[in-house]
Amino acid sequence: MSATLSSHILDTHLGKPAANIAVTLHRIQDSGGATLLAHGTTNEDGRVTPDAWQFDTTLDSAAQQLSIGRYTVTFDTQSYFDAQQLTAFYPQVIIDFVVNDASHYHVPLLLSAHGYSTYRGS
Image (cartoon, rainbow, N blue to C red; front, side, top):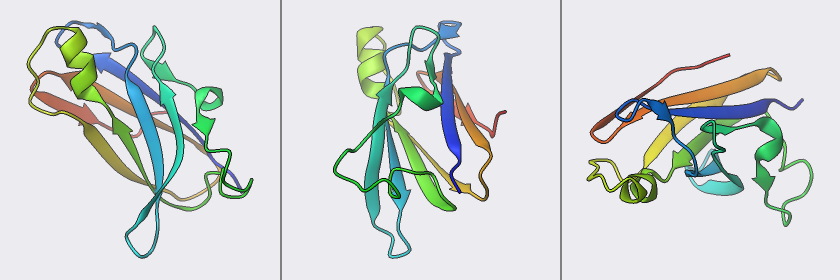
């Protein structure tokens, strides 16, 4: 069983997609520790598509799959806002979510310099 993951960031302050934001994906272990699985960067449309994730090649193939469990996606918002010459309140946004089945998971982020919102997309 393997789910897929995508993300989309819209900058609500500037009214456009947020391009070139570094994103990391971690699997949260039952012990509370985290394992880095993959990283990516949002494209010009503010998206990280399922095929754009770069999985850690030191992990075995089973570990490179999104199976049932808990994960976090971390967005490096500080670097993005620095590039926009804006002072931001949140240097990073961490979204903690659970994969329950083999479906596609879309994690959108609505972002501004002083706030953010997220939801499960489709």
